[in-house]
Image 1 (cartoon, rainbow, N blue to C red):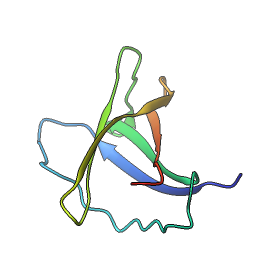
Image 2 (spheres, one colour):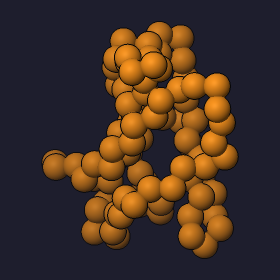
Image 3 (cartoon, helix red, strand yellow):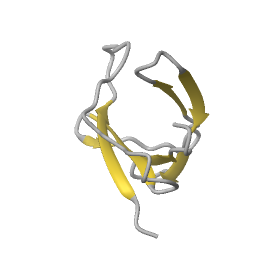
Length: 88
């Protein structure tokens, strides 16, 4: 199965951001194929995620919210992913 990927790069630093807006679009036809891929860095180098877990908060245009666990794909190189459900 071919995935439709939305890539997001984050630099971890002391500054906070309340939310991140993207221009990623998924459609109802993207069932079980819509995937968000996260790459985390700190000072330009991959951020190790050896002991990390992650949560993703999705806020939809209708105001609904989804809080989900993300999957750590590569703990050494700071990469994680989330496959959206059909409802998201």
